[in-house]
Image (cartoon, rainbow, N blue to C red; front, side, top):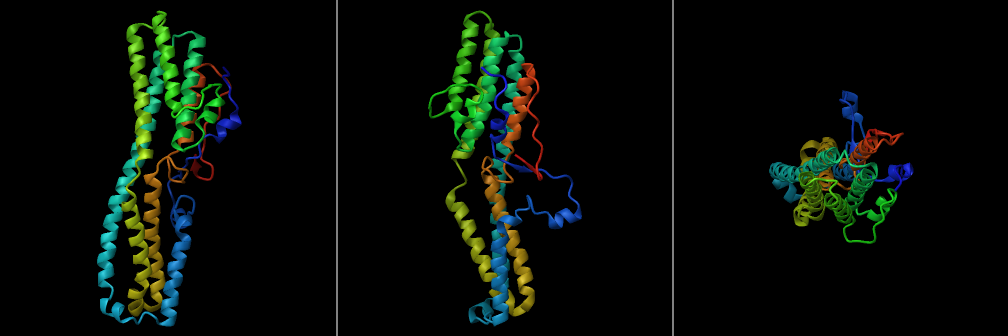
Length: 313
């Protein structure tokens, strides 16, 4: 079993990202693009703003129904949409935060396990600990719907096609620990403690799979999308009679806010997806990888991942 896998393959493992910026200055607050969600919503905002300009220029805002309604109903609808979006984004952030906690728990359980098995012979530690690295890579691939077998092949872990490669690796490690216990190398109480750590790792996987497999209800998200689009499309007709050429400015700001909140909610609701505001799984896997290889005495270690263009992947 090779201790030093192909570094290029490791570098390509994981594409989930997180925006990491130092404390923002006023200039960065106003003009930062990466991580600001602006690139995702810019064309929608441009379309709504252009529509507002056309309405003001042609005078087509003189629609009797709109004239009678005025802006008051839109104010009430905007408040209702804001509250609804707040609840949705809170639910999405809970998913993101739980994913973050689960990966932190994975690091805790793996670190604890390697400490408890630190006095095993070199070959046993190599087999178990490199399998743990392969497991982390496989879990990352599983959560991104990538090829789990390809993710572990770089660590010389040979597994056949299984519905759950991660669980197969855990079963292999469990069998190794049981064999060591029966051989008298691992005492009963240490085997029991190691089994608890393995159960903790399996619980992390189950929680992450639950997050991935049970997204926010589609009808809930669809209602937000439709309501936001309809509100932004009709808003220029209500504002134009009173604001004139001030309408495009107000519409651009409101559409950016609503479309931006909607897009951020989409990112947070899928914490393992390849988006700028998703979890940096690749960096977390690299942390675990470096610590285990260092424990095994492997030199040089893979480089710790750093943000590139404010993106930590």
